[in-house]
Amino acid sequence: MPYPLPVFISEREHAHDWPNGQHDDAKWEDCVPCSMVMLVNAHKPGTAPATHTEAEALRKVAGYGPIGGTSIERHIPAVKRRYGIELRLSSGDDFADLWAHLGKGQGAVIIGKPANLPADHVIRKWVGTAFTGLHAVLVMRRVSGAQVRYIDPSAPRGINYSGTVVTKAELRRFYVGSGATTSIHKV
Image (cartoon, rainbow, N blue to C red; front, side, top):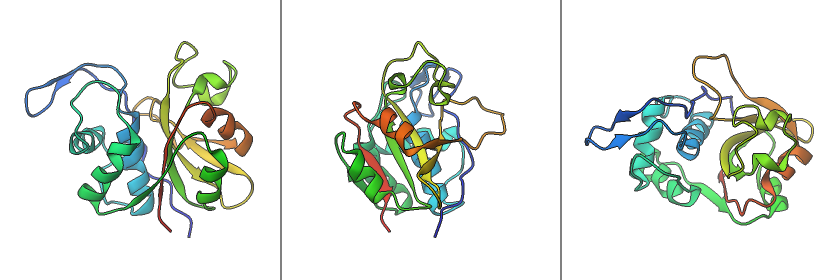
């Protein structure tokens, strides 16, 4: 059964303090937890509040403080603890494994390199052309054809955004070379 598209959560934030008093700078560093919360809500709508605050709560459960990058590996057990959902981990640059396990209508959080694509490509729209690092996004495989809906948490808040459709070949180019890992809900 295809997953519904989740409510979009942006990783863009303003500097603020966490409830424990730790200061959170305004850097965009919550792409993994934002994408994970969207995946949870795609699988089980309404399971988690569709907010950046919820993504930060998941980040904390994964053992991270308010600043710096995170990993999918540590968020998988955090998703299990917080929402009771088990995710599958696929490692390395094995795009064939990712595609084989990403069934039609299903979603995954993947890490890739937007800079693997041309500067004017839609995958680079929200991260900008100067960004050359790794980035986590939610992808939802379409029921027909070799395409995914690519949902980038770097898109700004307050816009009507449900991602964009990219081809399997474009997704492979984003993914390959990232040393990425993937989480896919078990079917």
